[in-house]
Amino acid sequence: MIDQFIQYLKYEKRYSEHTLMAYRRDIEFFTEFIAGNSVAEASMKDVRAWMVDMLEEGLKPATVNRKLSSLRAFFEWMVANGLRSSTPMSLVKGPKKEKRLPAFAKKSELKDEHLQSVFNDSFDSRMDRMILETFYHTGIRLSELINLKITDLRNDQIRVVGKRKKERIIPISSSFFSELQSFVKEKEFNDYKKSEYLFSLKNGKKLYPVFVYRKINHYLSLASDVSVKSPHVLRHTFATHLLNNGAGIEVIKELLGHSGLAATQVYTHNSFAEITKIYSQAHPRGRKM
Image (cartoon, rainbow, N blue to C red):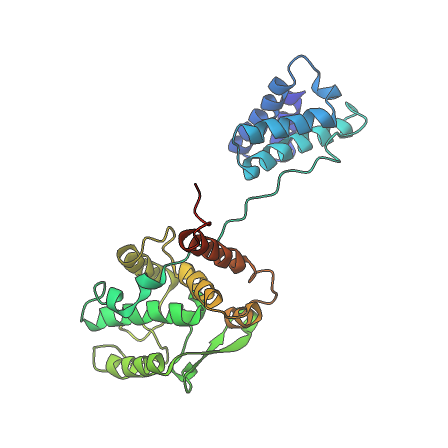
């Protein structure tokens, strides 16, 4: 039956050889688990026992769900071909996927005195630092930073055009606003062609994603030990630091440009992790014996 099912996937579904191998391997693992019993007679209890066994073996929920998906397709094919009257998968729910907490840089890694050792005195390095600082001060996305225009700087605020052309205004400190204004003036005297964009290439054209990604990856590698070194990690850092310093989740939602709270609430996990860490270090009864 397994051979027939694989032939069906190959010629009717036109799955790749790699996918076919994965399906075969998953189904054969299940048949080995129920050794001595027919797959055509396998029950819901058999499937659940297999799922528990995989989790106890240390397989990740995503891997277990993929294997269950292969088995589900196999049982549905058997039902469609009259080899079973029903599928035992109808009441089987896979394990919940692990929630990955967003990585974020430490406050100490983004302090002025620390960044001074990372950047040099050249104007190109100054622009790189202003890009990094803008990500951290505003929490904007990579695509939003690339499209920032000089006219978007307005009285200690930055106007951002986000997804679906939705605009939002992000407040910034007076000192950072002044730094950006100073940077714009200096750009004209450092062989950069006049441009409408806040950050641009020397020919005046706006930056492109890979250019910015590589810059941020390089400087975060020098400045931070954060596991992920991308522009997006600075967005996570912005949100997490705000939350840890008392900002409300609704405010952070608006600053990030999220359409709903669900996407923003993930940062509460980071905040709680930070609180737990501080408690365990500071409270006499908080330390594990």
